[in-house]
Structure formats: C-alpha cells, structure tokens
Length: 334
Ligand SMILES: NC(=O)c1ccc[n+]([C@@H]2O[C@H](COP(=O)([O-])OP(=O)(O)OC[C@H]3O[C@@H](n4cnc5c(N)ncnc54)[C@H](OP(=O)(O)O)[C@@H]3O)[C@@H](O)[C@H]2O)c1
Image (cartoon, rainbow, N blue to C red; front, side, top):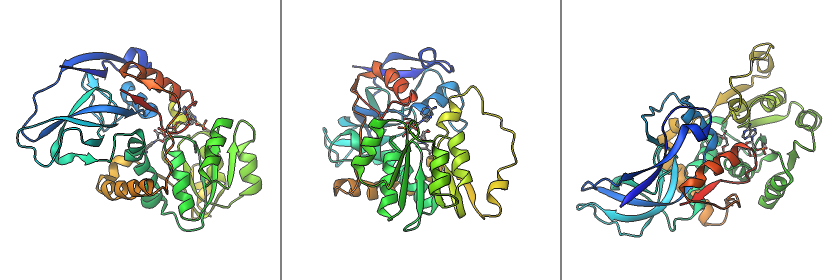
C-alpha cells in the first residue's frame, strides 16, 4: 500500500512551485508503533507559507518534507507489542510534518484518543490550545476586562472570543466580512463587532474604547497592531499571536516613528508575543480543559463550510485562507 504525501520540495514563496504530491511506501511498523489513517487535516496556511519559504527558524526542512500539523484519524494497524489499543479507535495528532499525508506512523505512547475523528477536535488541538494558553499564560486575562481580538472569525479568533466571554470580559471582535459578522453573532459572546469594511477600526476604538483596552490579542499586525497599541489602558497588554498582514509582504514594513516604548511607558503597558510550541508542558491540561468545554456544550467550534476533499485540494484550501475568505477553521477531508 502506498502513502500519498503533500511535500515541500524546494523553498519558494509560491505554494505551486514549493510543493507537490508524491507517493511513498508505508514503512514497516516498529513493535510499539501504530499506523493512523488521516481523515481530516487542519490547514494553517499562514504558518505553512513561512515553512515553504524557509522562514521558520526552529524547523529543519529536508526535501522532500511532508508538512501540515494537525490531523484526526483512525488506527488501522499496530505493532506486535502495542497493548490496550483497538483498531478503528479515533485519535488526534499534532506534529509539524505529519498531517498532509494519507497515513502516519506514531509511537503508541503518544496517542491522544478522541470520541470520534471529527474536524472539531483538530480545531481544538492545537488551535484552541493556542487560544487558551495565549490568554492564560501570556495575557493573564482577568474577570471583567475589556478585550479586543483581531481576525476574530478565524480558526483561532472564534475560540479566543468565546474564552474571553467565559471570564465575563467585554469582548470587541474585529473581522472583514458580513458572513464573519454573522458567524460571530451566532457565538453570542461579542459585545461589539467591527467589520473593518464597514467601519474604521481606529475611529471606533478611539471613540468608544479610548485608553480602555486591557488586553488586545492581535494576529494580523500592521495598522491593527498600531491601533491596538494606541488604545491600551494603563497596565494594558498587547499580545501578538500572529502577523498575517505583515507576512503577506515581501519583507517587514519599515515605519518611521518613535520606538514602541513611547506608546507604553507612561501607561506601564506591555507588548508580548505568544508562541504555542514553547508551552508544550501546558498542552495536556489545556487540551483536556477544552475537550471538556466542547463536549459539555460550552464551547462552539466552527468549521469553515467550504468542502475541500483530498490531498490535491490542500493547495486550494491554503490559497482560500490566505485570501482572507475563510470563516472558522479550514479543514480538508482526505
Ligand atoms: N503564535 C502561535 O503559536 C500561533 C498559533 C496558532 C495560530 N497563530 C497565528 O494566528 C493567526 C490565525 O490563524 P488561523 O489559522 O486561525 O487563521 P485564520 O484567522 O482563520 O485566517 C486568517 C484571517 O486573518 C485575517 N487576515 C488579515 N490580513 C490577512 C492577510 N494578509 N492574509 C491572510 N489573512 C489575513 C483574515 O480575517 P479578517 O479579514 O476577518 O481580518 C483571515 O480570514 C495566523 O496568523 C496564525 O499564524 C499563531
């Protein structure tokens, strides 16, 4: 049996030139390994693009290199000494370079069991975990604070806004389409939604939340970062979880203005970055917490309604996310 894989075969900014589909044999299983058939994979197009451009400093890419991080699937074979695991059991996996392929081999001791291999679980593990840890470990979010979230209808954003409301925060959500506004409204957790195609973010924040934002979570960067920075409350925190707009450029935008401390010194405010893989020891607890919120009906997981099917559609799914069209987590059914 062959394993179809979507791989990076050279560094290039254009996904069509950097990647291709190949077939390789499935390796023999070691005594303590299991074979998983990936059923759904999560698309992290912004991160992936940095990977196939050769810009992720902590990952060594050796060509051809499978990419993709999270998947849910089923165990279809197991090594001779694997105990307590049944064929057909549903599992969730998270590892850079494991997802964009039909099958993956995993050490049985690393398995995370889930009730069923549905896409919601891959949105939680690890995107939901990132949302939770950014709020708990970096923002140190407190009850009743005023929070603003950019790209709020995205895979990460729609979980962030719900977690903020669970702390009774005043939640301001930024997004860029009417469809996204509808999705955010359906979550019942946003006090103010700003569709930046209809209203100017800076005007709304200056007028309604001037110097009043305790926590700003930004995954877009550029002018949104500047606007959030300008409206931080005393002791406010601006947490950078992503740089979507900045990373779309050939190089980082050079701006001519005072250094960042001009805006934050007198307020005792701060700017911090969040990077999920640096909090690995916190993942199991965060995952269990989020799985149980979801299973108890206290967390809604939104999957983008587009139907991407098969390894060949990962490229289209990526381009769709990069065009800013997605709403919720983008997944591909294999
Ligand atoms: N630091 C970490 O450990 C970590 C972990 C997970 C995710 N992230 C980052 O968090 C961000 C969200 O990830 P996600 O997978 O959930 O994506 P996403 O938010 O579902 O999709 C990206 C959204 O960002 C907004 N956006 C603004 N400018 C953009 C641009 N130039 N290109 C693409 N999108 C743009 C768009 O929404 P609007 O038009 O509505 O603004 C778009 O729909 C990404 O930047 C990702 O890399 C970081």
